[in-house]
Image (cartoon, rainbow, N blue to C red; front, side, top):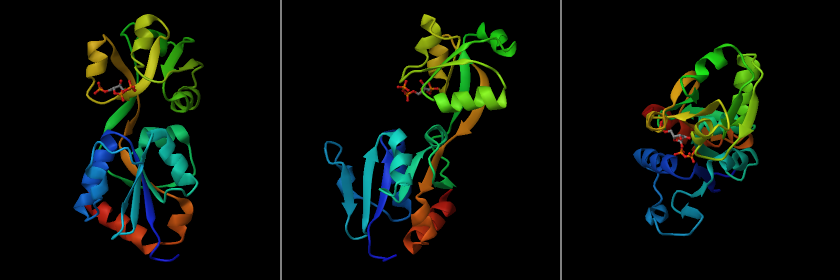
Length: 214
Ligand code: PRP
């Protein structure tokens, strides 16, 4: 692989992107074009370092990386698990720490415990299916939602939810609680299989430097 080609990095839009750029800065990788918060540009370049960065919806980051449209991606473990794409997960970056949990009102605990046929609302149907079918061997009905998942048990759409818990304040403010933990989560660096196999020294250098930070 030619060493002067661009390395493309896909970042999940939002909180993780900001943290990711702070982390890159620590190993001398910056992208001044990205500092302008009002820009409508989608792709940002550092000509000197031959790097390109782009922001996408978190769910799309593994797709860009699997197909090689990005060599590297930074995205939450929740998205990696949910999307199930073929890629290398190379570093647990240690930020964006939270938990995937089964949550609901206290009253749902017994139904869950008794393996009753309950409804589970979630933005993560694959993670929820895998947890209930393969780990708990429990038959449930999964209902896919796209946000504000905590609403579901409050308005009677489902008994429980499978969702991300960070501080727990969304649950507390809505009279819900963590009933079971599915798995811990954090931001991960993922790399395209071909980019990794070609042993592009710029990518391996970057990985080694980042590993020393975490
Ligand atoms: C996430 C998650 C919870 C909340 C948890 O939602 O789905 O609702 O954050 O955080 P907390 O434990 O600190 O309260 P997000 O803000 O990403 O928006 P969403 O409801 O659209 O998924």
